[in-house]
Image 1 (cartoon, rainbow, N blue to C red):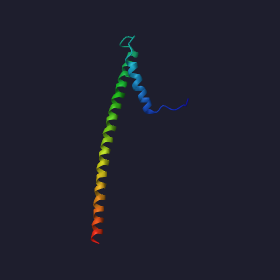
Image 2: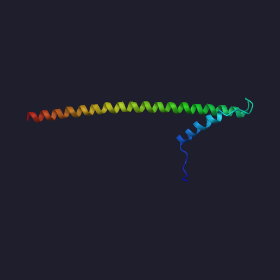
Image 3: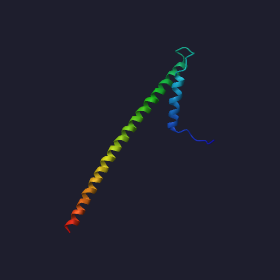
Image 4: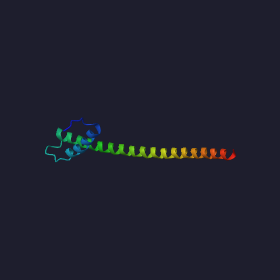
Length: 96
């Protein structure tokens, strides 16, 4: 078995999956105990990680889509420039 360090995205994924499960366990202690407060904060942390992950995914998706549109627009401009250049070359050769 190889040993490797746990990377940050893997750690976040681990927290996102483990903490909500811990927060949903049945509560054997009184509601005002420190354990109940810890479980509540773990549950809130799990929700915060899920929200942050979803928001990050939406930002990446939006950024990727925007970059694709910019690339497409840039490629069309390059194609138009090459077309105009080639038309000029052909016209120059035809006149000569």
